[in-house]
Amino acid sequence: MTEHDSIRAIRWQDHALLLLDQRKLPTEVTYLECHSAPQVADAIRDMVVRGAPAIGITAAYGVVLAAREHIARAAADWRQAIAPDLALLAEARPTAINLAWALARMRRVLEMNVPAPVDTLLQEARQIHADDINANRQMGQLGAALIEPGSAVLTHCNTGSLATGGFGTALGVIRQAWGESRLTGVYADETRPWLQGSRLTAWELLQDGIPVDLIVEGAAAALMQTGRIKWVVVGSDRIAANGDVANKIGTCALAVNARYYGVKFMVVAPASTVDMETASGTDIPIEVRGAEEILTLAGQPIAAAGAGAWNPVFDITPAELVDAIVTERGVVHRPTRAGMQTMMAASKPAQSQ
Ligand code: MRU
Image 1 (cartoon, protein in one colour):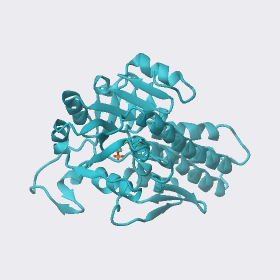
Image 2 (cartoon, protein in one colour):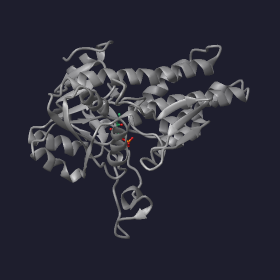
Image 3 (cartoon, helix red, strand yellow):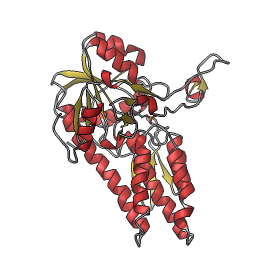
């Protein structure tokens, strides 16, 4: 199933990290070259790269760049010298737990005192990257199996190859379901204010030969009312121990509408997005970005001069509104704390529980 999966947003090439600049899509396809950890932290904060798993993978490569730079300066205390770089990476964006998760994996390598740390760190970053793609393919199969043939689906934000190591989470399920001829249609909402739906998801699906219809967020309830869609399929930036889900602003509204109109709601995310240390959604930090993202579009003012704006970029969907959480370790139906614990305890990809 590779014919609907051609895009890779993160590349390690000739000792540099190349990031597909998602601020410029869909009109320009250019890669930003990063040579230092502060550059990588800026790229994450400024949305050159975005999406929880992609942020984690990018930060892991950022640690490689940090170690290389400080070791090259022949600093005897290079392990201490890279601490500010690690802190910069960790602080780049607060909601996606994949960032802290990937940095913790890289820290474990740093603490191992291996003789060629840059090579070993690069190996670990590459492993994080490869594991993510494998997890996505596994989730694609588990999630697609839940979708009855002949269904249309609605997705939110961008959760595809652009947001991950490759293949995607929710968009991976859609890719897989499309490949299995289960889908009659794919709807994506625009995803204001950053337009991840219309700029990124639509571009990515069309690159891979999957047709898509865009709707404005306000049309989601009307679409559900028509009976055309059977599932809303979304990703997540962090899933709490009780199954509450943090995801792109607007996700909670979709879940509320879906329950009202009898549409099923699926969350697809790797185990690295599950944060069993966070008891519930109320404990998840929600990133609030600048008002200008709402008040302007492509640099042009679009709101009445003088208007203020509140711009939380994620929301929390309560577990009770979720029909299925799909990870590479298995599917949790109607998630509860106990169901999440059982799924996380599975070491290998599992069957539905
Ligand atoms: O602000 P973004 O574009 O980083 O938000 C991304 C999302 O909300 C995605 O749904 C989430 O990270 C999952 S990506 C596989």
